[in-house]
Length: 393
Image (cartoon, rainbow, N blue to C red; front, top):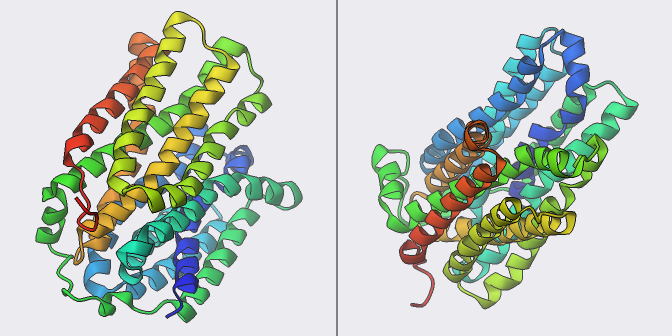
């Protein structure tokens, strides 16, 4: 068993989820004109993809714990390729939307199975480092998606982005077909994770519940930034559309830097300590932004600093979260990761919706106050609840 090759294959599968979510975003207007679709219909192609990712992760995890990792991953990738081809040759908007549903259901196997495989093949001493690699590759998806999509749309038709996804999915499927063994069979303890009892064991674990709360809160806050950062830049600094795009660089760079730094942090500190510190620090970071807004001292350097710190802390805590979860469960690893993805995707969906209602009610400062308060509550909960059975206490 070549662990590095296996890690590369499952990480590439996890990469395709966020990559497929964002690769055609530079061409949304062109797509709308092509199908004579309203902006709501165009945005629905992204929202449906995210919703299916969340719901199917809840289903895929238990199946992977009972039927096997490879048995779920390879068919999922094939379904992703089929959905991509359906989008590529879609004659109508509704066929395209159906293709997005098939895509999302297929690729939802990626991140769930990838984390479970890392837990299967790496011993506890090596697991955190491998999990950092998996998380780093996954977060490259939303970074490279719009870039690749913009290049493809600039030289080809907008539909070619789905051709890129089909080819990429086929390559990743063939690679995993060659290198990925059935890692579930290598573990002791049996399966049984596909039952309601298996799901109940995950939710019944105090440490797991605290990690799920933190994951929901952090992704809620992350998507609040994605939606309301352009608002801040318009109302406080009169940024142009191009300048608003550049303003996301500190947040994205921070996430990638945080995941990279987590490799070293997890070698020096216990994951539970990293998670406790990062949870409180990320809450303080957002509440600091509220203070800057309330006092009228917000500046471009201060805003960039808040975004960079949020990204570093989010990226630095993600490997610790997934590592602790797979350490907590042996027979329900994929189930735990499926629930984890379900919860954080719902946090991502709830963030823009709740924030919009709060903004209408009390303004943008209240938006970040609610986000910071939620992060502070989750940090307080995880302070006394999180534990890792593989750490020395």
